[in-house]
Length: 397
Image 1 (cartoon, one colour):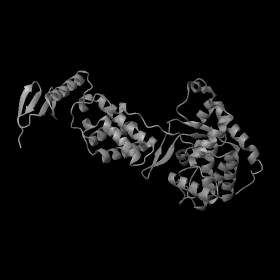
Image 2 (tube, one colour):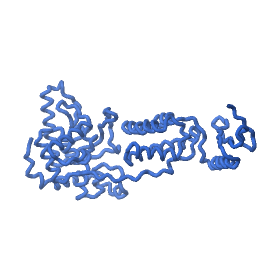
Image 3 (cartoon, helix red, strand yellow):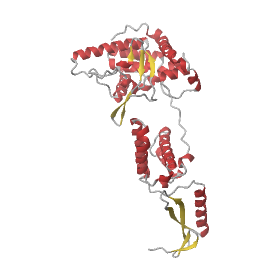
Image 4 (tube, rainbow, N blue to C red):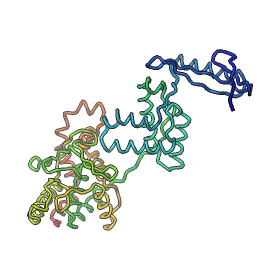
């Protein structure tokens, strides 16, 4: 059925068939070609409500906080942002996690026009993730952060998206409970190290030792190569990672914080590295070179090929369960290392050894202590474990 409108005031029309229905013409300005940008909105009620709508629109337009109508959809926004920002600035693992967030958003919102998204809709989306999907507050906040980033991008590209204000600004992140990680006491660590040495699991042993003695992350352990291990100077250079993204191995010539750090090699780890190197040479001779991979990884299989990072976590967890050890994550061995160092060293030095990117001004001022912190890190770990391990050093394989 056709609707007939009659103009009663500038930009306000009344429906002939239904006098309680009003059409308001909303003007936004001109596009890059000089064409007028406008939209129409119908309200039911009375003339006062139509006038109020028009007045609010004009006030927001004059203050430049008004969203111009745009036909850009959410999926098109994702494609544009990924091409111009995400795939250019982020590493592959971050790209994968970002696309996973975007997939959830499309499932919830559909391919909606971006100018239709508002604060209320985004707040409901976050509540849906928290209650219906059961996601943690930390994970929900990641969705909020990405939406905030996307709207900031659109605001910066006003001519394309016609958005002047970020609707996520009005939404506070959910409170996140601090994660209390488990760590081993020196005595518990001793029992684990000795059990690994007695087990003959040389590959798993070196992986655990690298995390415990040097604070290596899983991806750093899996990427460590022999050229980065200086046995003479007793130092390890941590400069690359090897991890997974959607089941695919990702190798990157930089660490998590894109910084190279050097850590020392304490006595027990030095002995372990010597044995692992000897074991690898034996396997290389046994396999006559043809079937031995020349990848030069410190942590590898009998044939020299590197481990899948996920397999390391699984094997480590299985070893703890079979041998009755308290379960802590592989990453918590790193926490154990740094926690022990904190009992004897300053936070500045521990931050350097751990490779933490966010450091205080004091750390910057006393950055010259880094070289000394390498040696003191070795001395501290040796001191902490010396009494516990001194009678066990001959507990060979």
